[in-house]
Each structure stands twice: as structure tokens, then as C-alpha cells.
Image 1 (cartoon, one colour):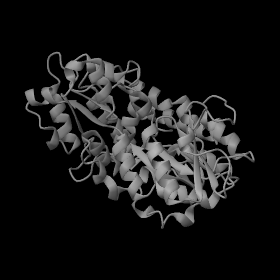
Image 2: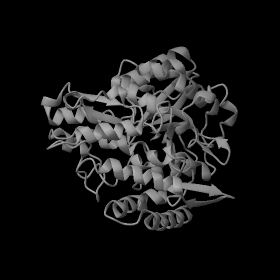
Image 3: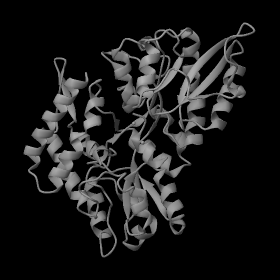
Image 4: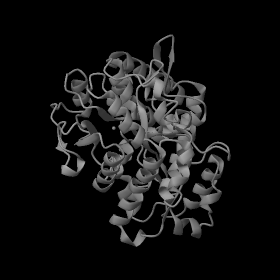
Length: 424
């Protein structure tokens, strides 16, 4: 979904009707067609863009395309899955919908999305972030066009690092990161606060080892936590988690890890960069004492793998204005507006070639480095059922409290397999 990580900073459903949660104001364009102009109906998600950016984009787009008008309706994340599903099955769907990158397969499975495979080349698809492009495809076809991305980085206390003689910019490998965290984990200071059920962080370590959460063979998906690669990933998680006092049976939201770090005795957390703002708000004494670096990888040449949260733009098959919708998408995902969006919202642009656009924003710059090695959850409609049940959290707690990693992984993999089969 759209970054449950952003939800934790600001992080991925309840039944809802087809009416918009919030209509655009007049600056977004009038409802309906008029004066020979075509009105494009667009659903964007709450907090994905600021009002200022939305108004600037709509004004610029309508100036560049005087035959088109844009009506933006802001949607809430709660209940959006059912709402989009209902819209795709109706005769009154919007022309463009912002979808969480991991939602696209679910919507595409229904046959309700327009196949955009023939637009990939002209939209610079060869440079798209993998963590947005891959989940935007389904059954070999591209349905989602990457819109923006965000991912986790390490948020750290610059003063505590300096006191311990640790140079954050030099931490480019996992071994270096462990050694530095051991130096920081002294006395009352926790080297890192890593809750035991942060399965997004675990996923990155598994991907670093060449493993995955689930794999597909012959059209059948099965859990893959019991592979040697995944076992190595959880073993690294254990090493890192032990260098702090994070609970073994809770995730980063229970209690909010930003509040724990704000208490002043945590050297680093794994979070979206926006977490730093929440920490400073809770403890103003830490203002100016928080920095960012990409999660280190196994080798210095490759950043640590991260879960890429973010959104894709999709076009319903039943939408009335396919050509106009594609014109809108081409503009919003193009270089000019991607750079402006990244700076306005501290997002990672949708393609690797635009990473420099956020060089002036330390948090977003660290995200952009990690985004180059971004991944998504298994690209199957059944994955939603896995997240709803989330046996990965229970697996982590079992291992961290003394359970045998291989035996617990086999049980969790079986639960993932069952959930995907049920949810498909």
C-alpha cells in the first residue's frame, strides 16, 4: 500500500461509496465538460501532494493543454481498495487513479485497468524505479505508471555519533554498520532501537541475501522464508536488533519509535526521513541533531535493499477519456513535474536518472540512494491477505525469543502460502 511507513511518519480497508471523499476547489477545474474542453477526472490520495503543488500543476497543465481541464478529487487511504474496485466495475470511473504500488496487481486482476505496456518506452520506462515499476505490472503487462516513491533510511543522532567517534558517511557495509552500532550501544544509550516485528526492515535484509518473502513457480506462489537466503536475512536482523532495547513482540508503531527516540537515549532508528520531524517536535532539544544515511548493504558498492513504498497512476478501462488521461499521466510523471514534486514533498522521483533532484534535501537524498535498490512485496493479488494476517511478525517474535529459525520459518512460509491461496 502507500507506505505504511509514511502513515507512521505522517505508512498501506473499510467499505466506501463511489462519491469522492473531498472534491477539488475551483482552481482544480470545474466539473463536467464545457466550452469544447474535455474534463479529466482524477483521484489522488490524501497527503500525496500538497494543495500548493496540486494547484501549481493543474494551472500549468491546463495552460499547456488548453483543450483539457482537470478535476482533482482527494481520496482517503482507509477504504480505498473497495472504492476503487467498485469504480472499476461501474460505468462512472474517474479517468486517472493514484494507486498504492502494491495495490495494482489486485486491481489489474479484475480486468478493470487499461494495459499501458505500449506507453512504457515513451514514458522513459527503462529508468523507472524497480520498486514502483514491477508491482505496477501484472501477468506480463504494465498497468501502473510509477508516480513517486519513498523508503526507509537510518535516522541517527549526529551528536551521539560524534561522541562515539563514528562517521556516518563511512558506514557503507552492513559489517561496518554493526561495528559502529556496537560502539554506540554503551551505558544508557541504545545503539539502535529496532522493534522485533519490523518486517519491512527484515524484508530488505532478505533481499540483500538474494532471497524473497514468497516465490512463484508454474503459476503457483509459496512462502519462501525457509530458504537459506531468507534465514541469513533473519540472522542479520537478530544481530542488529540485539544492539538496543527494542521490544521483541511489537512493531515500530507500538509504541511509536519516533517517540522512543525523542526520549534521548537512542542513537538510530530505521524510518522514513519524516520521522526526524516528529522526533524534533516531541523533543525540541534534538532539533539540528538528527541526520540520515542509506541503510548499508552487504558490499560498499550497493546500498541495502529497501521496501519501496509509493504510488502508481492507473487508467480504468471504463474511463471516458483514455487519451486525455494519458496526456495527464505523461505530464505528471515527466521530468519537469517529477523534479518539482520531489522537492515539494521530499519524495524520490520515479526514475533513477532524476535522483539529483533531491540532492539539497538530506533525508530525501538518502532515500534516493536506497531507492536504487528498492523492491516491492510479492506481485500477486493474494499478498494482501498475507499482510492482513501477517505471519512474518509472529515469525520474527518467535525467532527473537529463542525459537529455532529454520523450524519457525517453515511454519511461517506455510502460513504465507495458505494466505496467498485464500486471498487470490
